[in-house]
Length: 343
Image (cartoon, rainbow, N blue to C red):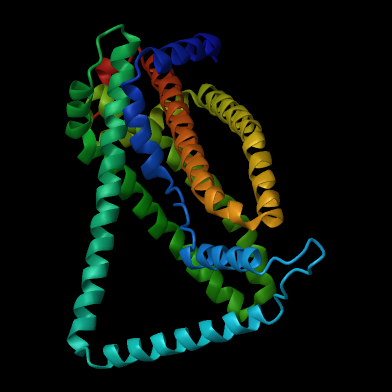
């Protein structure tokens, strides 16, 4: 093992915080890699009923010793009204749908499938563009070359198609290869359940190992595409060669990145503890004094949006740092072989 990991980590930190343009590509990867959950909307009818209840309490106020209004009859009434409205709405929808031609359903299903396919294609292309742009920007920044958003973006567009190919084609081929023994084991498990279970355990273990190795090869191949200008086939072979000849260095770098990412996640969770305490206090105050719900809902929604934005930005920074470590490691491991890439 010949890698100076301390030097790589220091350089990666410097690159990550020296050029904030790289965070733009990190944000794209953060958004497209995992879909963040949206916020839920509040119910205006509920807040209106709360206001009416408060006004009724004020109008009927007699003395400090008066008992609170009985809510036991209110809940069944609201439930019955809700069921009646829901039933009427269901009948109306069924009546409308019964007059829709069958061909419209097929057209709607086709439109939904087409929209889904286009959405997936856009996400895959956006990830590939952002990956290529980020790798190129980190490479330029590591040589103290000025990095512009437009120049890195152009490089990302130029390598996006090859990045899409190396992401999808090897993964699809691997899935087909693994599907054959999996199908045979399923058939055997139907005929001889005990033997099928015995064979399924090592098959799952071997498949997991193969998936991990292929994922690493694909990741290294992406660096070869952007940094060395290789096609996806040559880049895949390049990634396999780099992994085979520098397995320990790559394994240690992966452990380091996992450790740093875990520390960042723990730190971010600790930051959330005061916000969690604030949320619990707000909920408690709502149970004591219901009218405060009108102010608590927008404040809670704002806090939720800010938390999501903060976590997304943190994830973007971690993505930039992780890519920086891998780019620097790849350049160090292949520094004497960059001009001799195999085709």
